[in-house]
Length: 358
Image 1 (cartoon, rainbow, N blue to C red):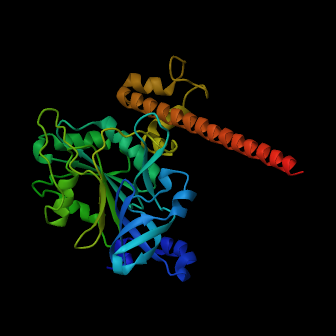
Image 2 (cartoon, rainbow, N blue to C red):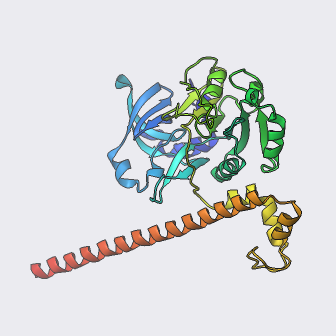
């Protein structure tokens, strides 16, 4: 397999040029689980570890290799192993905030061309969740596409699709049934040699079933979904990049029970563009959209042209982004204070030692 089959292009070629004469190889991470890596390169599949220098120089977990990343490493062919020295710049990256109170970034998938946001047309269907995934997808730099799976279980599949179209302007939306192989050919538009697509969505929406259908084999484990609430268990337990037999690359990810925002509000503006337009039409520039006269947003809700649930979703996400920005500022300030404190201690020790010598 050549690197171009794995998604290598002129962007990565240009950044790899610095290492070409150092007897290093370019590899793409195909599996990662708790800092244990498997990568694929021109010599095939290799077990990888990061170098001590890489670990020492890297100040954030988000800058460690993730599935889809291209890395530079020294290969030991006889052992089928390699050491990772450098992470090449990413063309796109889908990230979320790590679970809990810690304000850190978790990279879900890197260097993706198309993000398939998969939703089940059963009780899993949720417009507010789709808005959240869309916001994060636009932030990633990849192109989002919405897949409404399990059309065989929903007699109102087309009306559901219309509902999604109302909140996803400019985004391709498809209804299909992976278990019955209905509508799967629609995905071929995005799956080509050298192109990477990632499947994202909550547990039980059928991501692994879709990938198995594309592969033509039951490679990925599939669990039955409970009819009570249409909730699935985590079939996929780690992220994995898979090269399809007819060309194209897919990334399977575990289902996400929560998707906390990461990044800035650019994706929010893309998803809720009509609210941004209404905001600029208010009588007062500093309108809080609560009870001011001439508020275009309140008027739109009142006359039914703007769904109140969608407006609430917008405010909720906007509040989360603001909170994230505040937490990041606090964290940066704390890190700077700790750095200054360390420098001060070292300086005092240096002058004390200097006086002792004199």
